[in-house]
Length: 59
Image (cartoon, rainbow, N blue to C red; front, side, top):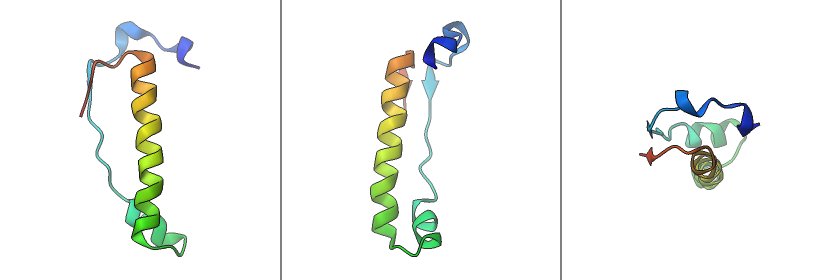
């Protein structure tokens, strides 16, 4: 999938705003901690993807 990305068009800096983990968990009948634990998994995947495609800066 990453080989389809035009690396010349990638931003050098990407900012991530983590929001909604508590609401996501509540919709599933779970507590906020459950949502935050799953948020960690998502942000880790995002960071790894950014490294793999060559994003230079991540906030």
